[in-house]
Length: 197
Image (cartoon, rainbow, N blue to C red):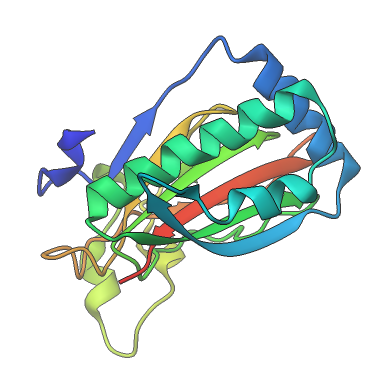
């Protein structure tokens, strides 16, 4: 993950395989719907994560629930260590429609995204963007900077994606360009984690 600190890197994808119990439980939670959990989480070595006990109350009982909670705890710790921020904004939601179907950049330092179930995030490589269009006034939509014939990169379910935003030092005009998948054959279970100051 240290490659994220390279100036030319905006997207880091960590591919994961072999998490069948987690994937099956995530699909169950996504199909159930109605999950929209948002909290501020603080990682404390002695006390664990304050928000995850509350989240567990919103999840269906199952042996794999603990697997999901442990996975979230791990990624919260990763984001706090990467960012140096002891607090993060945690969001775990079930979706049956795209959250952000247009290409965009996030105004954060870094955002961790993991689609546990359903179609996963999409992003563009730098070669598929004309960033000069984004610096014009009045501002243009990010979608206007997508080059004709651009190859949309797609994550797989359970992949963890780190997206640099425009608040990353030195990255003010170069945030990762990404979107939610336009179509998903099944409901999605989406995690985002953002450092909070």
